[in-house]
Each structure stands twice: as structure tokens, then as C-alpha cells.
Image (cartoon, rainbow, N blue to C red; front, top):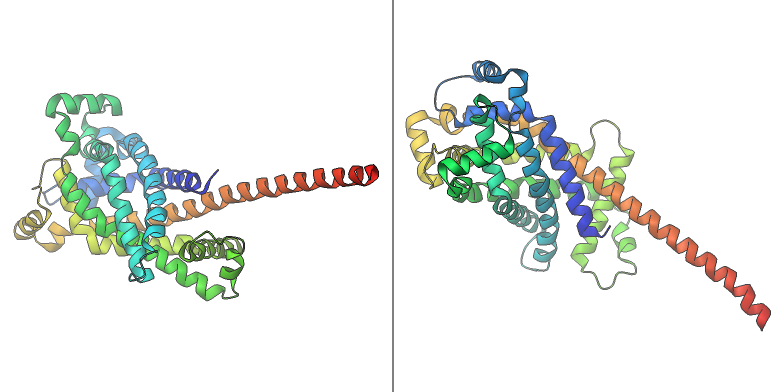
Length: 336
């Protein structure tokens, strides 16, 4: 498939795999975030289990996977797209390009898939007690609160995902480039640019970096560079933007103002810093670290596998064409 389709497929697979793996932690994290009482992690886990047993920790996962597949696909594809466009701006340093591309990609995916994000959050925090399916829950929500309920909290969500994905994708891309420069400085960029005069130098460097990181991933044992950088990037993003995440989640279930700054100030006054703005932060890190690691690792592996399929197909096609030419040459010689 073409490069843009590979980004979409790899991004979709990465999101679906990672979210399913860490669904129980995410359910617990979301319930801690949107609650305004003093329940701790173990008390919250006990209450969730009482609602619907072990299956309650996967309530909303169908909505989450359905939401994740398009949003993750859009996010990874638009990140590559924005990065290629922003790289043409000479006044932007590479780190700024990575950060801005990540932020814009996060906002694009959030705007496109926000109704599913809302349904997923409400099912995770409210739907466990009702035990309804995804389609029934959407129908019930629209009938009760109107279509506008699907877009409740859009403004704080767009504001919060910009810095979050700027840090997450930007940090990963910066670490990825650093790793490629450290492990291999043998001039792969020059080799990758051969025969591609039409492509921009920035895009050629990006492709060369990805190829070298994939090579390191294939050589290395244990925790791969992609997983390590993904984990670090996710933890950095969560640490720096968690209050925005808390506000937007509460806005989705109707527990917060639409202005995120006003909401954060009120939460800080009423609930404090650790038990308010950073409530559930520890659990969020426990969830984000493996989720981000699995996401980027799955993306790189899937993209690499798809690229290999394309390269093998092109090589096979070239061999067939060469064989045809070789068969035709003796016939032409005999005729002469």
C-alpha cells in the first residue's frame, strides 16, 4: 500500500492493541478523575467491581476501540503530514517541527472523533452501573440530553490535547532522531536520498531516520528503542498536561466549566493540588507508561512489516521485468 495508507493502518492497529491491553487501568483512572469525593484507588476498584464484576473493568472498551482505531490512524497519519509541511519552514528548528506536528495531529484526531471520545468516557464512568451496549447507550444519551451532549467538553479537550500530543509525539520523535544519530552515522541519509530528487531534504531525512530506528529495533533485544522512547514520551506528556486532562474528562460528564483555566482554579481552591488537579495522577502514569510504549512499538512494527511487504513486492516485480527483458534479448539477437 502507499505510504499514507501504511501510516493509517499502523496507527489504527497500534491504538486498538494498546487500549485493549490497558483497559482496566484506564477504567480505574477515569473514575478517579471524574469523582469529586475522597475515594482512593483500592476503594474505587472495589466499587467498580461491585457494579458489574470483572467485566466492569472493560465497560466502554468497545467504544474505546472503535474510537481509537480512527483517531489513532488519523493522529499518526496527520503527524507525518504536518511534519512534512512544517519542515519546509526554515525558521522552525527540528524540535519545534516535531512538537507542533504532534499538537496539530492530536487536535485533528480529537475534533474528528470527539463524539466517540465522549461516549467512551461516559460509559466508563456511568455506563458500568447500567450495563448497556454501545449503540443503546448512544441512543439513550442523545434521547436524554440531545446531540449536544456528544460534544460536551470539546473546547477544553482541544486545548488539552494540543500540549499533550505535542509533548508525546514531539518527545518521541526527538528521541528517535537522537537514537538514530547515535547508533548510526554512516551516511544512510545520502544513500536514502539517491534517486529521489523530487522529495524534500526534510522528508528524506525523516525516512532515513525511520529506517535506522527500525534497524535498531530489529537488532536489539529486550525493551526496544521504540517502546522505551514511547514510554518516556507518554510519561512526560502526562506529567506536564494532567490538569488539562482532568478538566476535560470532568467536562464530558458535566462536572466542570467549559473554560479550562477557570475550572482548574476552582478545583485547586476546592480540592487542592494533589487531591484535586493531580487526582489519579499516579495511576495515570502506571497506565500511560505501558500504553504509550505499546502504541509506538506496535506502530513501528506494523509500519515496518507493511513497508517490507511493499519492498518485497517491488523487488519481485523488478525481477519479473528483468526476466522478461532477458528472454526477449536472445530472440531479438536471432532475428538480427
